[in-house]
Image: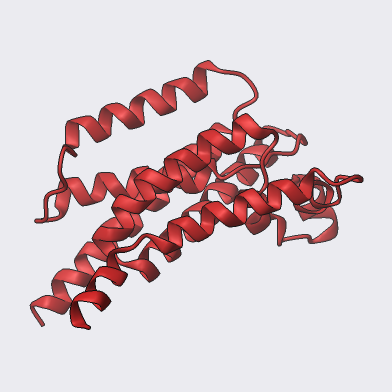
Length: 199
């Protein structure tokens, strides 16, 4: 029984649930009317003029097309499963969501500063939050993950950021913001875990 419980704890069900939620919401978005897009996209105008602050959260569950959805979900499923196994379900869920919100706040600030009123959407800020979290884990955690090194993580992050800045129609402030928030939260989690183990 104890072995079964330990095995259950290692299953990445939060990652799977997040992927499922994104897929279901995307399918709902394909219904006539685009209601969810209209109410959930990150829009500086709607947030400032009408106080629709929920968009800062909901925008991370919306995707423009199937390719956008697939590229984000494949990363979430595989990288998320690895990280969730390392840090636990609740810390993983919390950091993912907070990094997504943080990325959208960075995006919102960038839109306001640059007078950009275009809407944005996607889980990329939260995904980059996982990149930042993974970087904190490989740099400061005593545990080692198979085939994951600081150099590989840094190269992955650099390539992802370069792809965003070199491409068009990409919300780079959300990527950078999510990355920074995920890294900081990862460091704080490791400090808390260390203090707890040695307290």
